[in-house]
Length: 165
Image (spheres, rainbow, N blue to C red):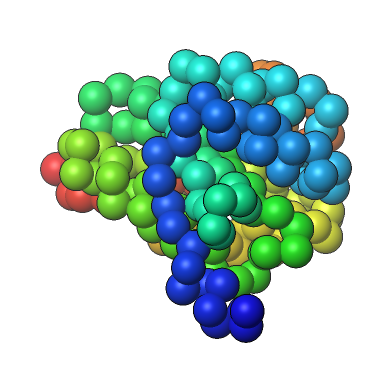
């Protein structure tokens, strides 16, 4: 199957309990992007927040977890695509689906936290560019962000899904 055929056969759906192990494994396979404590955090967050997966055939190749912070605001807590499927628009398809779903549920503002470019950590250059290309605007940099190790500045980004005034 060609890359184009695989791209068109991917689908996004709500995550189920049966998807948790695959999502955790995606995180474990990306040690350049996630610390050792994240797999368990993803497991817990999928149990209490909304999640979506992008799948090719029956294989989960990406996921996103979203927490509702207020009636009109949400945060994308976690998002990842397996390493060998990155840069094939699967993450874009997933996040665009999630943002549209949140918009239809009355969410006007979505937040994402990621490593700030000032950290000088090469693997996150593409991550920051990904969020910017989805319309996320950096609002602030916080170091240390509670729950993050000092020396890992957090970029706080947000995207408006609807006017807020």
